[in-house]
Image (cartoon, rainbow, N blue to C red; front, top):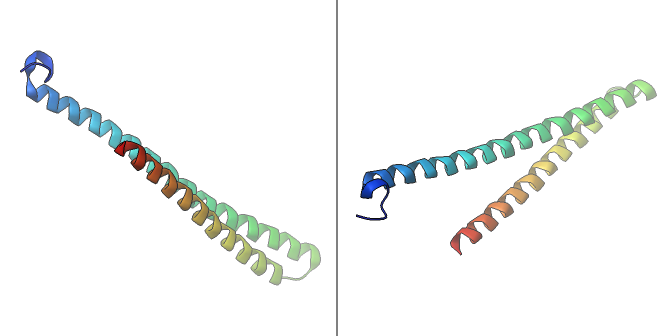
Length: 103
């Protein structure tokens, strides 16, 4: 059986296909892990930035704890906004990849 792999062995062709498929799955896994870690870092960073800004403004203006709480809320809201934006971008990218694969 010519064209099936090494010396016409169909098992070689199947094994090669599995290796190629596993490589594509690993690439997709790393893309997903990168996306998820970016989402987590984005949420934590925005929250901490808001918290520290509020804390230092409270110390400077003597309004403790109100600005800390206010800016903490702003930071949390900004973090969830970042999650929304990153998720929408990732879903759009995946949709474009699926569209190109169908061609």
